[in-house]
Structures are given as structure tokens and as C-alpha cells.
Image (tube, rainbow, N blue to C red):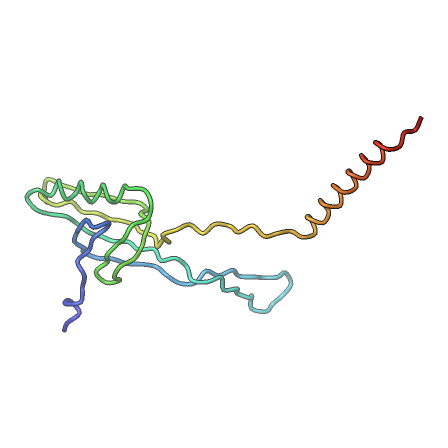
Length: 159
């Protein structure tokens, strides 16, 4: 089995297209800590894997390529992440960035796409509220003091 036999047909949100070439970036998210008056090498902190950014040069063609072009544009302009089937990388959940379309009367019957995808989760990660015990104790203490003051004023008068 050759590598060509292993390539999957490309599609985004179920809309097929052809891939001429593709490149992607990946790596690690890092923060470099440098300190004044230190000649030592900086400390690099690893913050986890960086999201993959995928650039695809693709096209649709044929007698009725307008229909295929419009279907792909519709899929690319739909809000939210979607499923990309990439010939080399397989199935990836991505968000669409910039899309560039090129058509010319010289080439005729073909629309070229340059699409920037960004790896994306299917659900947003939300911040999690963490209880603050010291603040809760302070709040309860303040409420108790106020209640005691009100009870005292209600039972005793200065007159």
C-alpha cells in the first residue's frame, strides 16, 4: 500500500474539495523568564502544547464549479468549529480563520482557496468559581455584628 492510497478525500463540514498543498504549525507554548544582571541562560517555562494552525491550498473544479464553490464558502462562513477531513492529518475539529478565493477567466472552471484553519475544541472551557473561605467568614462575621447591633438597639434605649 503506497502513501497515496492512505490519503483521505478532503472535506469541511461534509463539503468536499481538493487539496493541492498544505502546511501546519505546531509546537509548545512557552514563557521565557530573564532576570536583570544575570548572565545565566533564561528559564523557559513550558505551558503546554500549542494549538495547531493549518493552512490549506485547495480548489473546486468542473462544469458547474459555482455550486461547489458556493457550498464550500457556505461551510467556511458558518459560525463555530467544524470537522475538517484533511488528506494527511485525518479528522480534526477546527475553526475557520481567513479564507482567500481566487478565480480567473484564464483558468476557467476552477476556484482556488487558501484557507487558514485553527485547531478548536467542540466546547468552550469556562472559568471555574472557587470558594473563598476567608471572605465567607468575614461576610458571616459582619452579618452577625449587624444583627447583634440591631437587637441591642431594639431592647435598650439611651433615654
